[in-house]
Image (cartoon, rainbow, N blue to C red; front, side):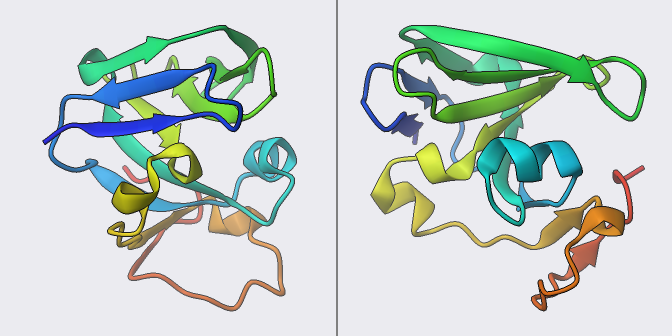
Length: 136
């Protein structure tokens, strides 16, 4: 099976040659809150070398907790966030799971929360695997 998705305007499309993500969860870090404009970012972590991304993208890099850049990739036409790519973890990339095709995202089962140290106090949902920062 291949995972597929696109941005809001469909100028950016992608496919991931994997049956399912390595991890699905909520990223509560402050940067993800700001990029998503919401309380957290729902992410699907996949192997970067399995991702094929097509269309006009831009990226913005800022230092992550490791001190290494995290590249935030978005559609240059509509601004939809597509992924964040941490240089500290080169084999993986975190796809913004809301951009997956509808039939695929309806099957996701988030079980992990990262950066709960930044979790907003009114977020009452608690997933099975919480981490104050990143998993070891």
